[in-house]
Length: 532
Figure 1 (cartoon, rainbow, N blue to C red):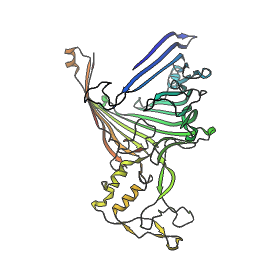
Figure 2 (cartoon, rainbow, N blue to C red):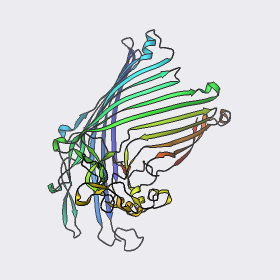
Figure 3 (cartoon, rainbow, N blue to C red):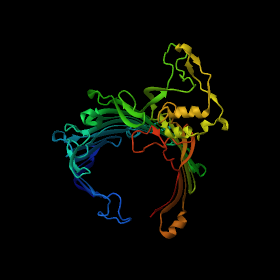
Figure 4 (cartoon, rainbow, N blue to C red):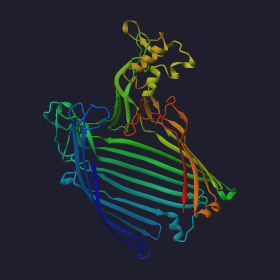
């Protein structure tokens, strides 16, 4: 297997710190040629005839041969430019244009620039002879706009055939299951951001606020097709996913080391993000896209909805909103729950907000810091709870350590099939949990979808700086010993002892379910840093 990447670049730059009076600026430009080549050959022999003799001729059957190769090139030009006025207004811009061999010639070129401006209000007032209030030390406003382009993998424009052999040695030609489109263009992400940095009371209190919005458009998606067409999906430019949110960081120096030798800094951060699906491929009649699925539980992107909506099954309930028993569970004649066959919305995997609080202490050569963070809101389906409750190993199946018979809260059809009556039939704990967990392979999705809110002590770190009197003897400027622990303590969770971060697959956008996932690990780190 080989992989090569060749880069050729040239760079020109110019800078003037004082031109036209108080104006200053800088300019850089360059170019790049990137070429990627990949090749691979593989041989499989099947089971070995002679144990532990790893030879291509020692297989029980004919060797199977596989190979692959690709070749791709991207040419680029890029540059940056920046100007400032009198040290309090800054304007910076970047540009980049790529030409990719993986796109059709008419679409091969794509341009994506960025612009940012910052205005240091406190510096401007001082330069102009004014004074900030004694309690207001620093103020900076900023804004930016950026675009990012992206191409696709080589050989993704035209459908072809893979030549191979069947078990009888006959030559075969296999078509790719994705219908390709040579007219696809590069993906494009646009981002806009505004923010402010403020400091008060001798810089002992600081605030940093950011509002942002980004739109991922022209995404290269494999949209599902009717299998009768001969293809499972079609590659298209589609989708407009919008991320919009705020981030706020506050820092307070409650104690300065100069006060009594003890320093204490409190830092709190708050983040709220809304990930909304503006469109998917409405022009093709596609308004939802599965990000992941497990049995009849689906993580979807749906037009008008939020990214990562969870869909699944629910209990059968009285659906007539004029009936006095509207919304109550409709049980069978044995007093056990029933499943509604309709797939319905169960929640969204994304948190409503993220919060973190860090306390940092230092005293002489010692420093101690710990972080408590919280995920607020969001949903997660727990397959582990299905298995534990179905087998009777979960605490919920034995209330107070016992397993008394129970009467499920709900209604049953009244005699003659008209109206409903309150359920009075008692069932065993085993019958109830077996029913809830086996109405389909994963039980009732509604019942096993939990609030993913959790609070934890995320990190604790202790460090010690070695005395300079000791270091001077070994020509070392500074040295620090540190020990830290991550994922220290789960303070609050709703998943009955299962970590909401134990998702089914970390390499997926569908993080709204877990099933038998390994527990998250607690890790310890010991370090020694030395400066010369």
